[in-house]
Image (cartoon, helix red, strand yellow):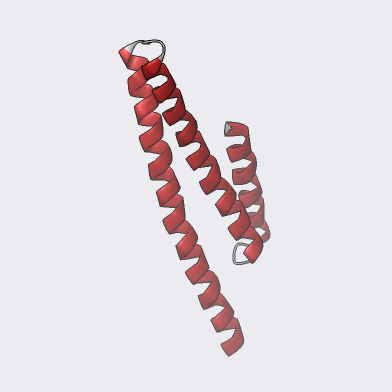
Length: 100
């Protein structure tokens, strides 16, 4: 799970280095990062529910799982906002290129 997020982030950094941030290709990678965060939080949630109904683990483990769910959802929402800003910036850049 984390390796997928790392690969997406590194490819997005490569796109940034080449100066291709304002292209539709970068939006796919941002979508991949958002998906990775949401899948990770879903796995934490499913693990928390499974643990609650089957084996009663230590409270610290349950707390870490709850924090994993909250963090995953929060980071997914933050990346969603960043994606919308990237879409707006791409639109503005295309308009500016048309004017110039």
